[in-house]
Structures are given as C-alpha cells and as structure tokens.
Image (cartoon, rainbow, N blue to C red):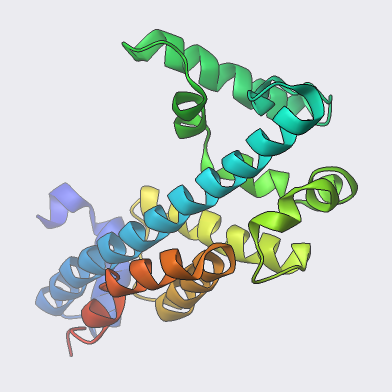
Length: 207
C-alpha cells in the first residue's frame, strides 16, 4: 500500500505519527473519514448557497426584465469571465443531460467558484447592493460573506484533490460553514448542523 498510495502522499502522515508507518496509516484512514465528513457539510452549504442566490436573482430578473433566466444576463451586469462560465455550463447541460435545459439544470452545473465571484468587490455596487444582500439576512456585510465563502471554496478544492486535512483547522471550517448557512436560513443551518459528523470524527483521532 505504501507504493500504491505513494511515499510522497504518506510522508506527512508518517511524520505526524512519529515516524511509525502503522501510525501513519491509521492517521491516513482517519483523515480520509474526516475529509468525507467535512466535504458532506460543505456540500450541503454549497447547495443552500447557490439555490438561495439563484432564487434571489430569478426574482430580481423577473421584476426588472420579465425574464426568469437571470443567467442570460439581461441587465448586462456580468463580467465576460462569468458569462463564459455560464456558456460552458449551458453547453454541458445540452451535451450530457437527457432533459431539456432548465434554470435548475444550469445552476447545478455552475461551479462553487462562480458563486464566490458574484460576491466579490467588483459586484458590490451592482449585484450586492441591488439584490444579493437579501440572500444573507443574518449578515449584511458583503466582505464577511465573501471571506466565509472563500474559506469553504478553498477547503472544497483541497478535499477534491485529496490533500491532507488532519493538519488543517477543520473545526473552524465547520463553524464557518454553519455560520454561512445560518446567515442564509437559520432552519437550513440547524438542519446541516444536526447532520454534520465532523466533531464526532474529530473526537476519534488516533493517538
């Protein structure tokens, strides 16, 4: 298994295990369980976040332009890069999905980074002040929301690349995820917290 997993990948775990290979493997297996628990929680929050933003932008686009498909950018507010991400997402929907394109199918194809960018300073005067602040009734400061989403986005990318998480502030990341969900919807935040197993896995860390 050392060869299959690679000495480079196992090295941080063996070092943390005091140089003992067996302890390193125990830590590796536990870290994988921790990553799975954290990824589940972040995944729940990502879905809540993107659906809340989608609902908000849909309502705004209908009021302003009589067009529910906000991602067509009827107001011309999106930067070219975000417009390109949407174009690729719509193309992917048409190529890989058996159903016709729907707003929900497009939203599901948009990456986490897309939503993070919509909360950036560039969109403060347009998207945030016009409508997106309403997505987060529990937190009206855009920068605070942006920072929280950035923490989750970067953590999600680490998890996707199977990077070590045993040496990361996992409980702080968990708290950030739950805070963000609570800013959007306290009921959703409570539901995600009830189904979050991160603290349980943390308590089982190998000696």
